[in-house]
Image 1: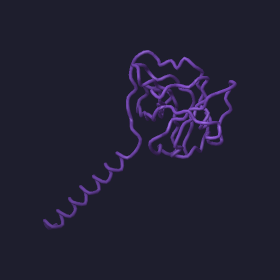
Image 2: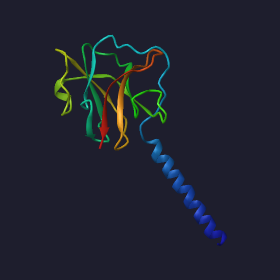
Image 3: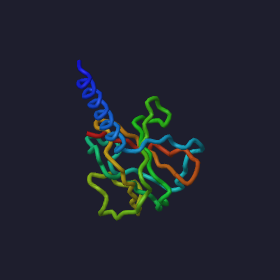
Image 4: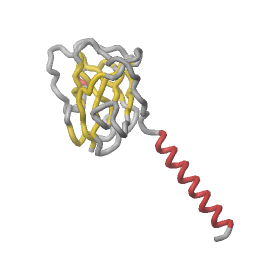
Length: 159
């Protein structure tokens, strides 16, 4: 091999590595939950979208929706993990934005029916796509305190 060929190969490798790293940085953010006592929402919280246990959920569901007995402040967010425990080997968490109140008409379909009357609907917007063919368990987390996320409240599997 000539020096020119080696330079081209090395340059191609560096470009490919940079492209892979750039692609990785545009996905969801992964963080370790804060250790401490379990967060207590002090109200009934039920995941309704995606329907708990659902399969074939789009890789980019855009939001997770909850029915709550009384609204949670925006300091609450969700925490997704690809295992049913927060301490699992291969731990991989995803933190969404804060809770926002939405109308019943804004809840995506299909959704679960709340198990209590007069719910308030709150949505957490997801920043990016999730891994395909993965099962995600859902917790809620109060970012204003040092607590461990509460849950899991349900799970779903992406398509």
